[in-house]
Structure formats: C-alpha cells, structure tokens
Length: 265
Image 1: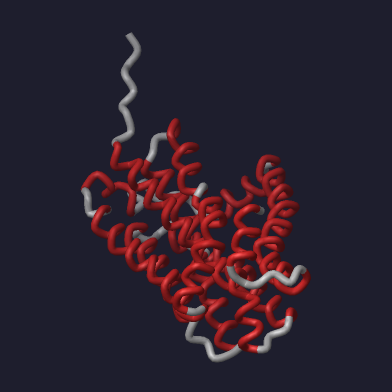
Image 2 (image 1 turned 90 degrees about the vertical axis):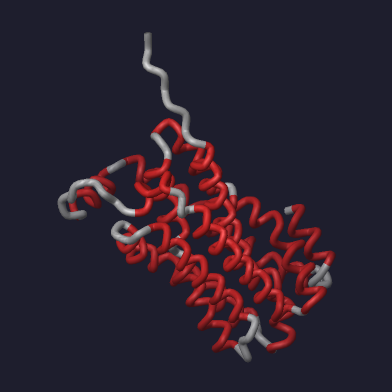
C-alpha cells in the first residue's frame, strides 16, 4: 500500500493569500504615479522628460537593490523582514503625495524602488519553505497573480480615490493599505505552524559563488532571462506611459475615460 501524502494545511494557503495581497499592493503603489501622471504633470509643470526620469529611477533602484536585498533575506527573519518591507514601501508611496516638486517625487520614487524590491525574493523564499515541492508551483502562482489583479484594479481604484480626495491623498490612501496588511500579517503569522518558515535552520552551506556559477551555466536561466529582457520593457513601457498617451495624444480627461481605457487594455 502506498504511503498517504500529507495534505498541506489550510493555514499555509491562507499565508499564500497574504503574499498575493502584498504583491497586489506592490503593484498598486508603483502604478499610482503613472496613472496620476497627467494630473501631476499639469499641476507641477513637468514635461515628459521629467516624467521619464521618475519612471526610470524606480526601475533602476528596484532592479539593483534586489541583489543586496536577496542576500539579506537569505539570512533575515522573513516574518519581520517582509512586514518591514511592506511598511517601508507603503510609507514611501504615501509620502509621494506630499512632494512639492520634481525633487521630492524623484526621492520617493527612488525609495519606493529600493523597498519594493523585497517582495519577490521574500515571497518566493517563504513559498519554498512553507510548501512541499508538489504545491510550490500553485503557491507561486497564487502570489504572482497579484501582479495581474493589481494592474486590473489600479486604474479604477486610484482614479476613483483621486476624484474624491485629490491626487495627493490618493498616494496616502493607497499607501495606507500596506499598514493594514502588515498588522494582519503579524497577527496571523504568530502561529507556531509557521516557525520553520521564518529562519533558515539548515546546515551552513558553502560560499555562494559556486551556486551563482551553476546558475550562469544553466540554459534554463538564459531562456528565462531572454524572455524577461524581451517582454518586460514592452510591459512596463505600456504600464507607465499609456495614461499620459491617452491624455496628451487622444485628449482623454484624466479620470473616468482614462480609467475605462486602461482597465480594458
């Protein structure tokens, strides 16, 4: 008789839902700038070059920070590190609404990129420790789907908030969601069921250099790298610039018209 395979506890899947919500917030916070860009440009007299710098500084800081953040998370207590990261990027997102000009926007976009870089390394590490190999694809799929949900709801949500309280408070309101998430996360993750997830208790491994060398020799890595290099620039170009394009080239008002168009696309 084959041995029965233990089922993954329901609470483990609830934890994956928390990761999904964090990823959704990650995308909401980064998209607030692009969705509100036409209004911000008009109020602060920013041209498209300045807007391009604001988009770029986020992605450069986000990309390069992942190297250091990933190594830090390998050694950190993931429960607290993830909570602090969400609070940090939510703070950076909220403070963006207080900016008096380009310099303030640039600073907070830089900080947003640095702090948001923790989401994927932390979430993937948590799934790897939380779930058995047979369930990890589903676990990763659950939290990664937050990107699609965030992109889908961002236009209507952010423009709706801005219509009621103004674009500055839209940053604050969207950023405040992360504080609610962090409080619920810290309460839920007190459960002893997750104790093994937060800190790596495996024996000390050899230096990381051989692991990096093995990755760089892997053909699978280079196939994924090639796809990402080809797809991501197109994706992020559209995400960042479509609201401005609709406003400047199509004469759409930065509100309901733009929100509907972005949601459909």
